[in-house]
Length: 114
Length: 114
Image 1 (cartoon, helix red, strand yellow):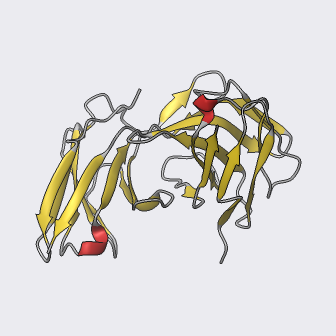
Image 2 (cartoon, helix red, strand yellow):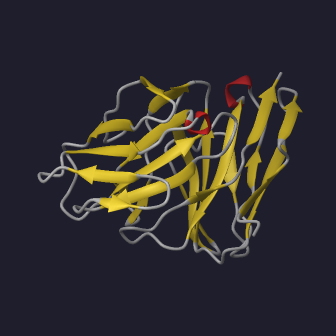
């Protein structure tokens, strides 16, 4: 099961900031939070990841709370092309192998409105 | 820069037929994965590989087989196709599994079993 909880859908006006929340209250101390998005009919696309400090790249910013139990992905100036399903992911260890699996829940369906 | 390439993109199978979904990556990644995504759902891990010659089951391996004879290729075989295997299949790869490693996805293969 996914180790994260996200709202099922959100709307955002074009040009405004889109703030997508994620709860990950069981995250372990050394595990990262990853964000991916999936535009209709395409493979998931990596956006950003972080551990405890806020992160920013050319696509988005990631704000992680001090207790690391939740985070927010920020798209600073949303465009119509940002309409997609956004997944917040915390990896799940596969106990027998020492590897990890990326558990994708149902994500947040973001619709950017003109 | 090709990244992760999957073929075919679309396929219709009859019940009981077999087929192989091909996946190749040109990033010299050690880890490769196969996911399936049913309509409106998140991705579920079918099989994964940590390197050439090593494969292991994910969450939903029944009805599938994989092999990893080279670093680049990770084919997924469906034996005796069933309607329940109608889905979108995504191949993915990552360099490692250390914290902070990201995975890269192919564009998907749409499979319908009738």
